[in-house]
Amino acid sequence: MVEDYFDRLSRRDESAFDLVAEDFIQHAASAQGRVGLRQIASAIDEDLGRPQIVVHHVVAGDDLVCIHLDLVGTHVGSSIPLLKSIVPSGRTVTWSFLHLFRVVDGLMTEHWACHDDLGALAQLGVGVGTGP
Image 1 (cartoon, rainbow, N blue to C red):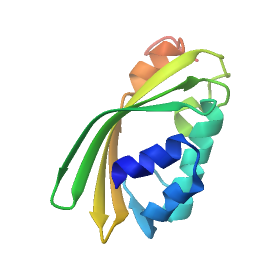
Image 2 (image 1 turned 90 degrees about the vertical axis):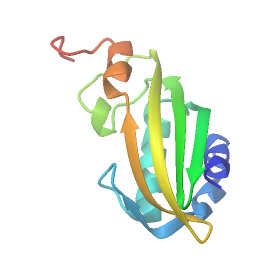
Image 3 (image 1 turned 45 degrees about the vertical axis):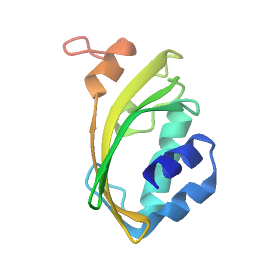
Image 4 (image 1 turned 60 degrees about the vertical axis):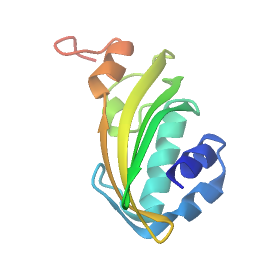
């Protein structure tokens, strides 16, 4: 089901959000609920020029699903917090993620994430001690 969500999301199929509980709990960002997740996905889509989603691994047990993936896109906007102070560079960036979802009754209900922000920033020419 989580793989289906990302497959639909990669095709920009709005039905992806039918797989998300309306009261979705987001531990990895401030935007909450299905509406909040849709806003996050839209902002990333705009900032990274409709990035490709490349799924590497999926592991599931009980009610938890972990998915390792990359977003591969072009830095064309800077609305998400990570990119907020960076002028759009037009550079290609690969942003790696480990997402953990709780799935209950066929819906994603809760989310945690780890993401390689420093790796993404380095690809954009921004790093520790270099400034934007």
